[in-house]
Length: 259
Image (cartoon, rainbow, N blue to C red; front, side, top):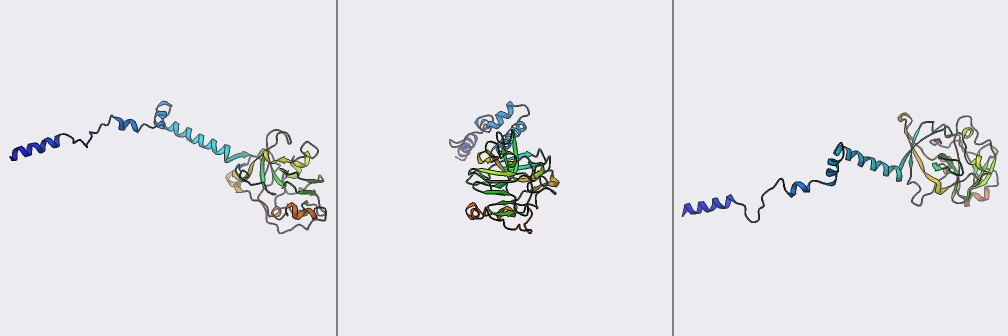
């Protein structure tokens, strides 16, 4: 009796039960681990390293196309803040969700047609509806009746403008100037051209937020307080034809740009 029982137990342990499946390292489990990236890596030279690099390049391309894009400064028109050869990082989402460029922002825009071929970088001086005049009794540009002290970011020795102008910025456009006024082709130079030197909002690529290269010059590009104090059109329209307010010598310095 004992011998028969032991023999039965040995038989049970020698074969799998119905609920147990034998492992097959060469079967479906191995094939299930072969994902698309793995199969692609087997096909491409360099294997998985090449696949990883391609995925990284695709990610950078999507970011550059829709979110952030580096631009190289080609001229001295935005000195002293932005120098020739600087790389700035442009936020392409800054104005995509109900946002509008503000006075003092540094923007990159497509100048094809109005300014010439290629992209330009300038500072926004007037937005739609603004009355922009050069110059008041002190030599400052006046926006909606408010004189703007630009000494914190203008190129040393430059006047706000040697070209007089008196414009009302049409809705949906921008009036832009370079910080190096003596070496900048900007809205002043195209007042008599089609479009009157204004930049359509649809041509704005984004806002320059950072200098990222060279590292020793890296900084955030902030909006100057001098422009933040300019009244909106409704508040300043009545004073636009009158004498401008005295510029505030205590205006906080703003970061500069070039384009």
